[in-house]
Amino acid sequence: MSPSSEPSFAARARALVHRVRTGTLSTQSQQRPGYPFGSLAPYAPDERGRPVFLFSALSLHTKNLAADRRASLLVTPVEPAEDPLALARVTLLGEARRLTAAEAAADRARYLARHPGAAMWVDFADFAFWRLDVMSAYFVGGFGAMDWIAPDTYAEAHP
Image (cartoon, rainbow, N blue to C red; front, top):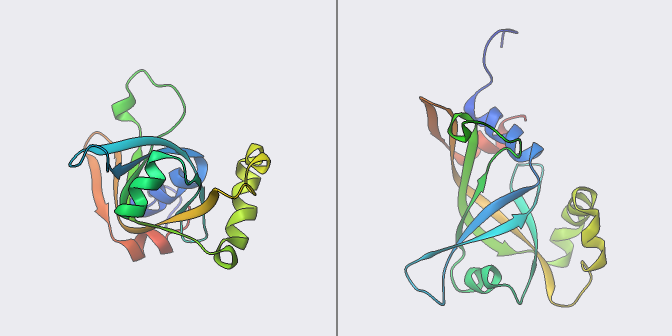
């Protein structure tokens, strides 16, 4: 890639997911069937850009995921903007699953490095790590710059 050429949408999406620490998680509501349910969700991306979350079993989004693993995470810049629609954003679609303690070891350290306050509750019995396995991503880089990104292209891109 020449110095003046633009990074790919996949690289830009991965960079945004890497830079931002919290997104809007949408799950399938169990209490209001047929409606999406949005939640604020701190996350830490793993080495393939998959968001890893620390969820309480008491939260509605965790209960929703236990019944239907399909979810999406909208990641937007945190900087204020006069025209937020001109900013880059990415929606990651996939299936979330609870990680075993062995699977979550590296993710635990990564998550706590990004969210040190979570150290106060990370070991509570009702908390567990979950990961969104990205099946597709939709990147918008501003007006007229948007496209779907295949899961392998997203995972292999360098932020």
